Image (cartoon, rainbow, N blue to C red; front, side, top):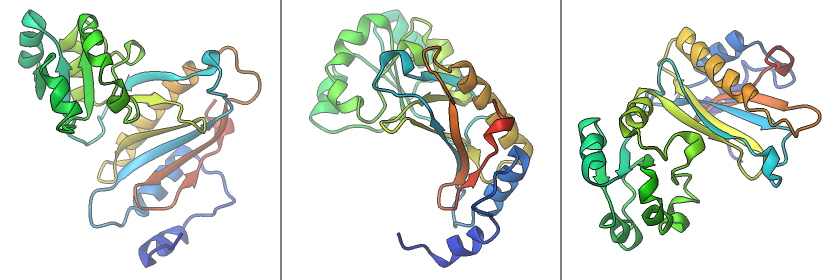
Length: 230
């Protein structure tokens, strides 16, 4: 993979063989975010889970104390009083069956999170092939299938993020922007890690956190000392 001059320059400050403490890793990740835009600071957690087994799956959500720095567009599938409630709570889009052809045929995907009331899951299920691969399918574990649409919308707008294993048993999540202070990023990171460690599957034998890396969108990764996290 060809790397640009800025990336190479930023990478010089990071010792690839070292394992860093959280504070130092966050400071390095912030310094290496040298792109012309406000880069997202991401955490990549390689786990010892085998996601092919249902009892080793990890999926949940956590509200980051300082948010993600991103404006999140929320689509809510609801009817009648619940649709009115969603609109009042600040959902960006609210609808029911009429949204299915818009998403299926017109390819409309101008939203970041989908919330649905339980009675609408039959309708949303028809969109599984489109929403599923994009990680947009509502899920009770993530708090996005709920009758309390106000709380769901408020949490998402306040900085709620979803975490889940990908096919290679890694969790990828944002913890803020490079413009955040080190304290804000540290708070968000600690909140995320507490949730992930709590979510350790009881069926898992052996090491849970194989590696944890913090990296800006366009910059090099900084590896953390996992022994100090668990």
